Image (tube, rainbow, N blue to C red; front, top):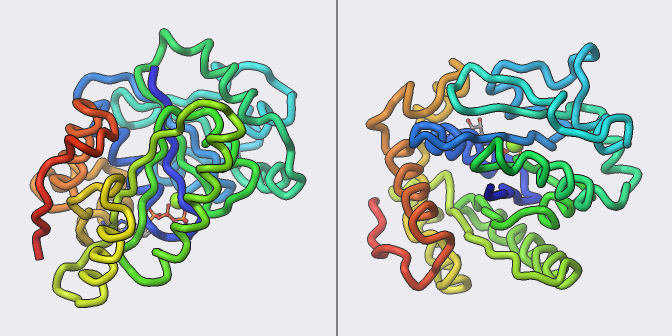
Length: 264
Ligand SMILES: Nc1ncnc2c1ncn2[C@@H]1O[C@H](COP(=O)(O)OP(=O)(O)OP(=O)(O)O)[C@@H](O)[C@H]1O
Ligand SMILES: [Mg+2]
């Protein structure tokens, strides 16, 4: 079982879209996928048409606060075949504010028990560098950092990379990562410049094919459909498929990343 965290403390950069689309693409290849929505806003849960604040259902907040000690009762089937979800909703915000320690160990322990049930766990993180994100980083095998191709988002990336390095030191084993440029519009000079800046600053750990801005992404979310269900031939669906194929074959493996051409 592989655990991938999708994180960036900057808001609105495509974390939830990336988590949802990678999950559905993995499931389409026959993988069994569990998504953990640890964002108190519950955007991924909403996308999957599950209420993150359902008081009748146990949630990740109960796990992190010690009221339950297993993920199994928290897991929902979703409308997407092969994709399951556990979510936490607004109650997770309290944990983040109170800086509860040890969640990474909790996550690592409970996920280990599900190793035979899932091939992939994808964690959609909140737009903060609080305790929830840090503990997702502590538990994961690979960190994907969606980064919007615009000036301010590049500034946020530096903070994310410092946190990654800190978690890597603390856990004492490498934390591989890949920066995934998102919301790219090759017609605008600002996007092209931001992408060039990213290439210069992070030549080895940047996915070289930015995910384009594509209205099909928003439409799919509005309909609760996977991007491929909604628009299999769209540019964004194809870009995400290229990314998942690369990750499945090579992991982040920067040296083996395919060509550098970027569609305008
Ligand atoms: N490639 C894309 N093309 C067009 N719209 C996109 C694309 N990626 C994401 N969006 C839209 O941008 C908005 C923000 O995306 P998303 O929710 O995935 O970001 P996020 O980083 O998870 O945000 P938050 O920090 O609030 O959790 C959403 O409305 C989403 O539908
Ligand atoms: Mg999100």
